[in-house]
Image (cartoon, rainbow, N blue to C red; front, top):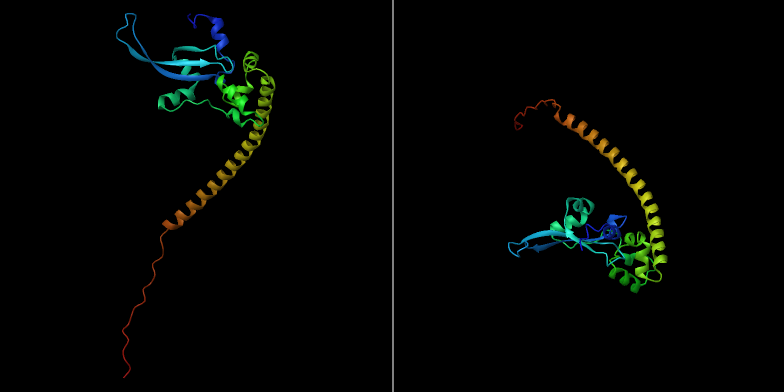
Length: 197
């Protein structure tokens, strides 16, 4: 089956939030139709979390590199391709067994769980809807804390810029006075001391 030609398959496999998809780039040896003169080509595997039977395997296209830049960079560097986000195990109150069941369905992060489709929740099974809601709540709490932290960081940057400007001003003043000519000191003439007679 040509998965690219089957629009229902690709739309099912594509998650509305592409960064929540489980993506893996890999190299595969491909031969021509006669089975000769093969070459290695880059391929991509895309799995929508919770829908492990909707895998897409195809040659890499330029849009894939733009849509999944983190995984592409990891692939090019030859390091393990990890899903970006907060590990699902860090969600407060999640049972270990539930986290492992989610990992088996390519749900590795809290962000993936929060954006999980209803079909994905059905694959996970009982408790998935509650878990998805908890993941969304957790991200909302974290994002409000992040907003406060971002404001603090911006204030620190502003203070730092003001201090840097003051330092530059003081450095310029010191440099100017260091280059100013210094008056020559009159040397005291040493006269030999004569012993008293």
